[in-house]
Each structure stands twice: as C-alpha cells, then as structure tokens.
Image (cartoon, rainbow, N blue to C red; front, top):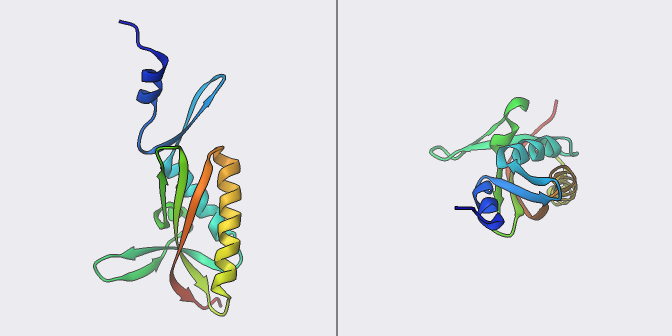
Length: 134
C-alpha cells in the first residue's frame, strides 16, 4: 500500500521540532537546538548576567554556566509551526529591567527567526534574580 505525501509529512513532524517544507525536502529543528541558540543570543544582550534555573522545591534561582544555557530556556512549537520562548534570566543590578527585556526580546526574536527559518510568535521574559557585576 502506497502512503500519500500528507501522511509522510505527519510522520516526519514531532512535538519537539519545528519543521519547514522546502522544494528539496523537509527540515526539522529540534526544540533543544532552538533553546540553546536562544540562550546564547540572550546572554549576549546588555544587562543580562546569565540564564537562570529555578529550584521548584526551594524557589531559589541559580545562575547557569555557559555550557547549560538551554536549561534556562523553554521552547514550544505550536500546531501552526510558530515558536514560543520562555527566557529565565538574571539581570545586572542597576539596569532598567523594562529596557533590558525589550532589547532582549527584539534581539532573540530576530536571531532565532534568522537561524531557524521559523516565525517566533511570543517571547516571555521571566526575571529570576538580580546580581551585581564586579
């Protein structure tokens, strides 16, 4: 029995990927890849000390090392193939959080869209802490 093209595309797509259909075939970008790229883009922004992970039990935010940036980022790909990103960040002491968040959103949105070829629907910025830079 021969499968039609639509059923093949459904098998190719998964809940953890964003997909693009090109004239050469399908391209799938895993959520972890998008998360790592978004985290790297975020820490390059002014006013961002780093990404944070929150211990749910204690409610304590922890600054992540450079090699585990994707743990401070949540990525969801919607049914219509758009990306929603949650960024858990720690900001520098004394910066305007609103300005830093606005700059962060525009930079990450631009870089992720250029990198992945997928549209970013929404970016949620969650400030988990403030840290003085020495």
